[in-house]
Figure 1 (tube, rainbow over the protein chains, first blue to last red):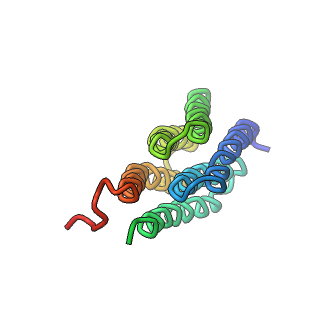
Figure 2 (tube, rainbow over the protein chains, first blue to last red):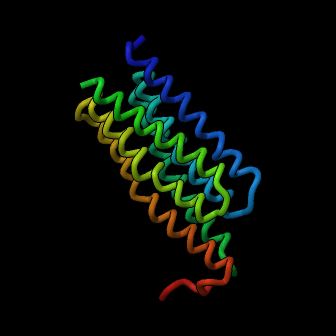
Length: 86
Length: 99
C-alpha cells in the first residue's frame, strides 16, 4: 500500500461528505435548486474520481472522471435549456 | 514537497466541503449558485495542482490537468446559464436567446 494512500482516502471521505448536500439539494427543492445540486454533485464526483485514481495508483482510472466531467457539464447546460421558459 | 501537496489537497477539500454545506444551509437559489463557484474555481485547481506536485509531469498528469481545466472553465459558464434560467423564470429577462 502506498504510504500516501490514507491521506487520499481521508480526503475522498471528506469529499463524499460534501456529496450529501448535493444529493439533498437535488432531491428536495425546486427545479433550479436541483440543477445547482446536480452541478455541485458532478464537480465533486469528478474530483473524487481523480483522488480515487491517485489513491489506488491506477492511471487508467483517470478516464472515468474525464468522461464524467464532459458529461456533467453538457448535462447541466442541456437542463438549463430545458428549464427555461418556452 | 509532499507536505506542500497535502496542504494544497486539504485546502481544496476544505473549500469544497464548506461551500457544499453552505449551499445547502443558506436559502435562495441565487445564494446557492454563488456557493457553487468556489468548488469549481478554487477547490478543483487546488486539488489539481496538488496532484501535479505529487506526480510530476507526465501523460496522466496532463489528463488530470485537462479534467481540472474543464471543470474550472465550465464553472462560470454553468453559473451564468443557471442564473439566466432563474431570471427568465422570474420574468426579469426575456426568454429569447440573445441574437
